[in-house]
Length: 265
Image 1 (cartoon, rainbow, N blue to C red):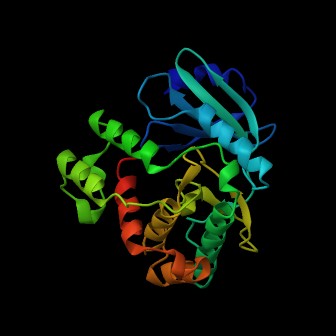
Image 2: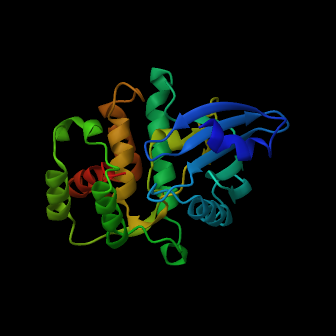
């Protein structure tokens, strides 16, 4: 990891680097403090990581043009060992923080508002295709390349084989898609809020954004909000999310399919 980051560290010698996360897909994120607060996302210079930082930068620029609060790009580059995306920090705290119990339903409503705001963007103007014709081949490629962690599946799919995952994905594919602009990974940790007002301050990690069925977002948001531990919400918060978003727009069959699809990413 130190070798991979060395090229970028030379560009920001006056900053203190603090590791934040190592994503399951192979990305590394560092928080930089010093003359300005920054975040650096690093991807190893290897094929088949499934990550494209240029694609994420393009999506950040498009969302900025749509008026959404997303990180401002500082640098996008690549070297012998890694590619990197440097962005300014966005104010606020993650919706996945352990909010006081009384505030959690409100946070769930903000999640629904973010989904609605994204889904109301002009889909015909979105240049990024995340439909099933695009995403399912990506999912199967990840499965064949050994990038799907079969030991980290959701509880209801624990012990499933690659063959069963593939068969279930292909047999459960919805016949039609209700296409909107989707975040693609609409989990609480990708939504930032003002800790005092609980108003939206930023949306991050938009590398999977594109034209897709609305349930690509709804399925992940509802799954995460159903968890009573990490991020500490629960079924009552799912209900608040559903009511705020509009229960008439949510299909449980599609929700289940998109939660299955997310196992591949």
